[in-house]
Image (cartoon, rainbow, N blue to C red; front, side, top):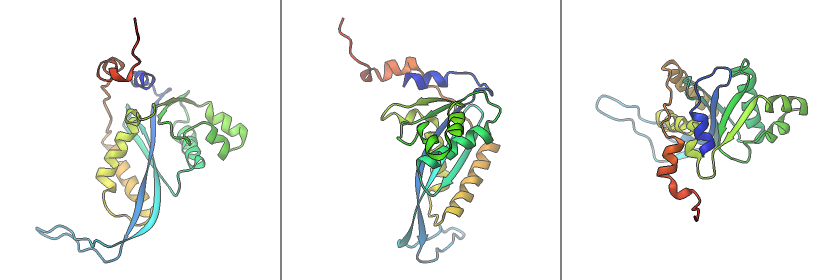
Length: 208
């Protein structure tokens, strides 16, 4: 926890951007009956019946100090999908960065080893060396700022029925564009000093 909090204290440095990564799933729900659109003084009406069209995965890549994010929609949440996200981070989003400081949770797929599942060893090693990895502790995923951004995405964009991956991807990208244009950032205030007071119960008790 303290390791992640110290990372969040760093000043903005385009050569060493602090980037947070998290992922979530979205169930694809189709309509059985055509919805009745909203009208003057009336909300839209949806039938309670629906059809399940599978589940899609969303990766949130978020640089809180720059107000820049990228939402990647994938069919699955595998090691190879995660590895492709890291390659995009390295080679497309931050090709000129000396090091990408990456904060993420400790999901078993979130490991440099995943790069070797997706790429040849030389490529995997090259990508792994581009990152400085920092992990939130178990039950501490709230420390990942990308989780906050995923919550906003869920409330503003995903809290309705979407029945296919392409529509989900289009809606997520439209939301991403609006957030980026607004330069929406996160001003993280919780510090190591705060943690030692407010979360003192989580620290070992030392007998003097």
